[in-house]
Each structure stands twice: as structure tokens, then as C-alpha cells.
Image (cartoon, rainbow, N blue to C red):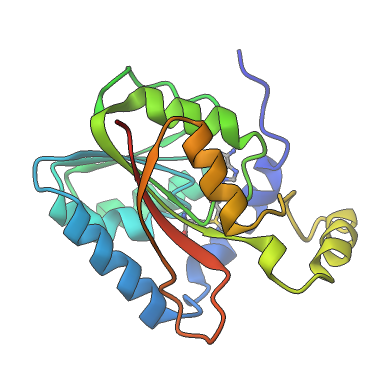
Length: 212
Ligand SMILES: C[S@@+](CC[C@H](N)C(=O)[O-])C[C@H]1O[C@@H](n2cnc3c(N)ncnc32)[C@H](O)[C@@H]1O
């Protein structure tokens, strides 16, 4: 059996607060949502890793056939299921899974979403390889990822201190160029990159990459 992810308790603890925190850049979020709706098809089976409380999965569910949304935190999944029930959403399923140990069958999904999570998962090569395995040929990886190496350098000091007090998860520092190289090394072909944020300098890269 796979070991429990070290940050599971952190995410469980903050799940209720996370579910009520407002989205900081709503216009940027809407731009990403709109682009994902354009990329996804009504017949698609979609996997989401690190779905949090299911906000995006529930917004995209009407545009696809089925969405299998996963998160390492059982508390996040409890809230996502509550939200799905409140919305009477029939085609979104929520389950606990570590993105490093994806359980689904090979070649079973048309697209995979990794939104605000690849900087948190640790071994990204393992995560990307697992996603590639589950995608059908031609399937899409769609990710929006904060590139912490492009943010305030003081973060490299602040995060370890915050972690001492249980106020931050472990994170990886990489640039958009680093992430694109990792995605290519995992066997994907990047077909689109964008920055959807409203600010002058958006550190979150939106990447669409295909499994050849
Ligand atoms: C910053 S939140 C993003 C949630 C959602 N994707 C969004 O964009 O609002 C990160 C989420 O990733 C989850 N997470 C962190 N590490 C993970 C891992 N190794 N596997 C699966 N989920 C993970 C956390 O539990 C949390 O719900």
C-alpha cells in the first residue's frame, strides 16, 4: 500500500476554510475556465488531480460526459461531495487519491486537469507519468501551475518558517520553463501556453499538452 502523503493532514485541516475563501483573481479564473470548456468535448471522460473542494470540477461537469475528481485530502473530498449533492450533479465523482499513485486504468481518460497542484505533489515526474499512462493517445493534460521560482525570492525563506508552524505545505520552486521541460520529458507535446491572470506579472502558467 502507498504511504500516506506527508501533507494530507495539512490539507484536511484547512479544507473547510479553503472552501469558503474567495477566488483571488476571478477574471483570471474565468479565462482559464472558458479555455478549458473550449478544449473539452461533451463526450470526454476527464480526470482531475488535486481537485480541492470540487469548485472547478462542478463548473466543468456540464461540458463533459464524466469527471473523475481526486484529491489526497479526504476532508476536501467530503466537501466536494456535499457541493455535488447540493447541485444535484450526476456526472462528477469525487474520490481520495494521491496524484503520485493514480489508480485508474491505462488509456481510460480523454483529458487530465492539474490546477494549482503540481507545485505541491513532490515527485512531478511520477505524477506526469501516471497521467500519461491514463490518457488515451491524443488526450490532453491541462495544467495551471504557480511557478514559485518566478515569485518573490523571500518565499524560499518564508515557506520553511511557515511550515515550522504548520501554516504551509511543502512546495517545489520551479519556473515555467522548468515545468515545460518536465512535461516534455514525461512524453507530452505542449500545444499551448498562456497566462490568464489579471495582474501585470502572472506567475501561474496555463499549459495544454497532448499525449502523442
Ligand atoms: C491549492 S489547492 C488547489 C485546489 C483546486 N485544484 C483549485 O485550483 O482550487 C491544492 C490541492 O491539492 C491537493 N493535493 C496536494 N498534494 C496532492 C497530491 N500529492 N495528490 C493529490 N492532491 C494533492 C490538496 O489537498 C489541495 O486540495
